[in-house]
Length: 214
Image (cartoon, rainbow, N blue to C red; front, side, top):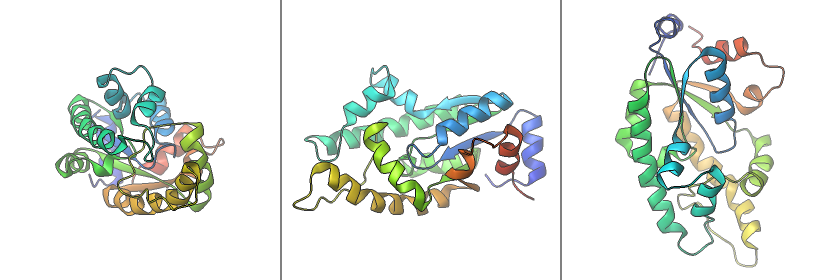
């Protein structure tokens, strides 16, 4: 949703502003969404939570364990199921938005039904949390150390002679690159992960950076 600075503030003051965060898993979307929701009294809608609740799981870790890794048997089927659930959960999240709302999308939002992606762009001001080159090592390690379900979308292409873990690390940069342009295409505003995770960043500075400059 393209908005001017004045339109953004008017919608916020009238409690009609919807913001959606997009970007890679573990890049800082949920952290930023929760911070904005708490500081400025937005209704927070977490798509990941809607999915794992539908699957009957209690935590994000349970959801990640269910989906598993791309080198495991049955992963492609679970990946397909996960995308189907994410599409319906994202539609539900859009319908839940009321007043000032924040939609915390999953990293795989770019794989859901194009009609639902268009609905996000039409109804929300979309903020992309951008992964930078220096995020790569952290994101690769977080894949195992801070597990979240991850859709690979045919980007896992293992090489002979490497362990499963080594192949994940080898393929992760390609996954990151393949997703980056899709996030940009959805976004109305882009902030870097370094910016949103800066411990010295104030709530007001974050709000000002998210708001359109003109």
